[in-house]
Length: 347
Image (cartoon, rainbow, N blue to C red; front, side, top):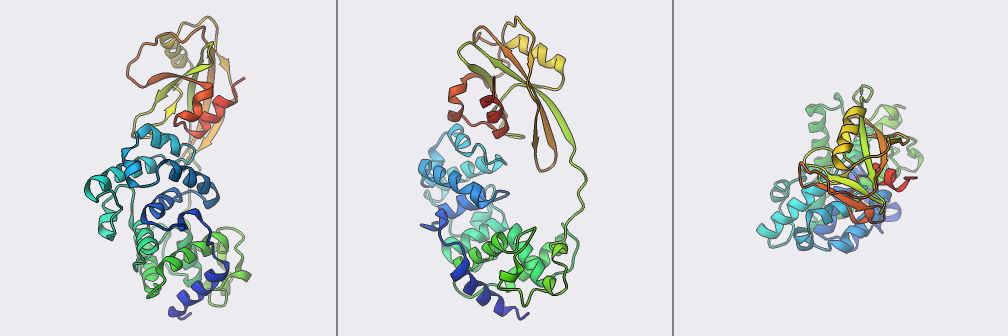
């Protein structure tokens, strides 16, 4: 395939078949592109759209996001997962409010200096919001380039990543960068999908090396993954007569950072001892159905234990993160999605 034909073919396809009605395209400002790109990391478009619209209604610009309390930001993000993304957004907004006059910088290097923005995200912002010639290399783009050009290299190595970056940069058109970037991501998301790609509809089908050699499934190369380990945690559901539950705000760093979750323990005995600290108990715990939740590197088996306590007694606090929250007010707080589902399904 002649590389300079790639951009022309892609743009012609996108003009007819691409996605032109995504909410962050209207208007396609730097702020809106930034928020969408962060949300789209590890998350599909159809999931992101309602979160994006709700987020924009609450935080329409950098200054609004910078001035918001951290709890409000985490509440708006709850359910999207990978919560460090929300903390990085908030930190970046604060930095931009202080150092960039409340705007996202129009410099690739300045974008890279912000928390949570890497090379591909900075390139996406620069190309889509400012029309600058910068490449992107997210999962969709890697898949397209790997199949069309079949670069050699072992999955997950710096050598292969460098080859893909060089390839991505060599294909950039001299203009229409916003459309080109969106088109490349669209092609990977709608046609050149991980499974069941629609090769017959692809504008690159006559020049795709993987298709020509019948090895689509081999690209992009994948690292062999060991089975995910599993961890188990007992979680304490302390519910009082006013249908409030005891919640604990998690540390900013680590799993579900900054969100409200249930107090937890590693063993049943520890859970029972911990429950006695929080409230007087007149009955044994009711064992609720376990909840299995998957993360990228392990699975978490949640074993919930329900205690009905007569009243929300003042609990002994070893920190300031313990709060009794009404079951009808869960949506007003940032909770991990499996914890929210567990509590809303209480008998």
